[in-house]
Amino acid sequence: MRKYLCCYLLILGVLLGCSGCTVGNDHRIIQEISNRLDTDIANGKIVINEDSHSGFLNDGTSIIAIQFSDDSFQNAVKGKRNWKSFPLDKTVQTLLYGYESDELICEPYITDENNNAIIPEITNGYYFLYDRQAKNGRAAGADILRRDSLNFTVAVYDSDSRILYYCEMDT
Image (tube, rainbow, N blue to C red; front, side, top):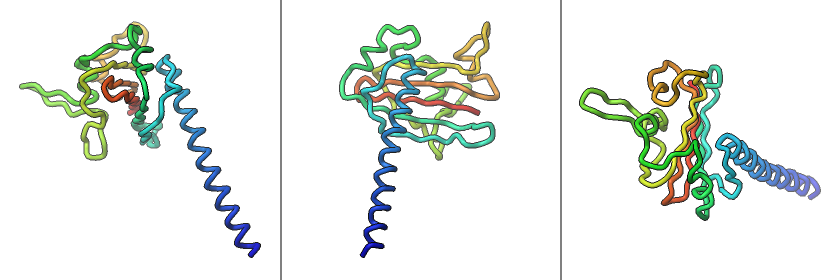
């Protein structure tokens, strides 16, 4: 009987410990994203957290979706210099959804394992693009699409669903 009780308590402790780790990890992720976006997102809840960073030189893509229960995030980014309102510019449109013209077809950059765009089509909201590879004195933005390697952060807020999609890509 004592063995069973000890095993039960051990398993219970592990399960409770792991659930606490998730909450603590979510808090850490929320804090990091708040710092990177220079916008408080503490009242948001992570609903998607996928990260493929693990390859050579930590290449990969992170996708984090954060749900808000009110318009506090939208109110916080309105008028901020680094945030732009929709429609998306051509660079962000291409990174998230691809681009097609008579002369050129470009697949989206941020995709799932089947090369489908991960971020759903959004019509109302705000977006943020940070080119982590741009050097002082060099253009950022559209320049991203002409490089052999990519290191950028893009965040898109859907005003209708109150979801912030935060993505980092490193190649």
